[in-house]
Amino acid sequence: MKKYIVLIFIGIAFLSCSNDDDSNEDFLVLYNQTYCADVWGYADNDDELAGKITKYLKAVNIEISNVKIDNKGTPQLCNACICLSGKRVIAKVSENDLNSIKEYGFQEFD
Image (cartoon, rainbow, N blue to C red; front, side, top):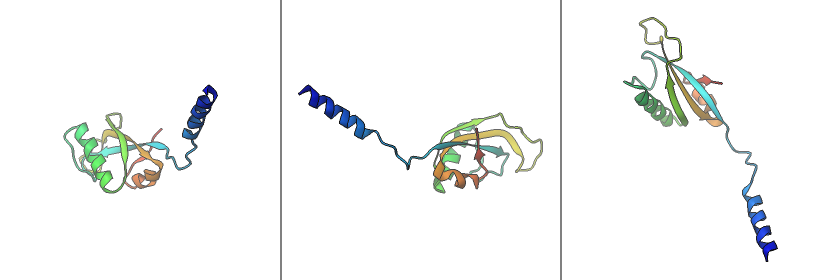
């Protein structure tokens, strides 16, 4: 009887393991924020900015996760909207959305 229980347990464990060829790898992406030219608009703080980015990209069928904002970019000292603020947006995106998110100025980040 014990042999059958052990065999059943091994069988269940074996069947629960699989090589899922359709699994997506996540990639880190980076976006250098501008002063006011970002398509998702302006935000008063980093949490609001992360929310606006996530909401905007979801509306165009791009799913991102783990959105972080830091100040490690190099700000440009100019008054144009397209100048960089020095804030960086770092997030994870699936392989399926990688090319799509690059169309919005994101780049792969190591």
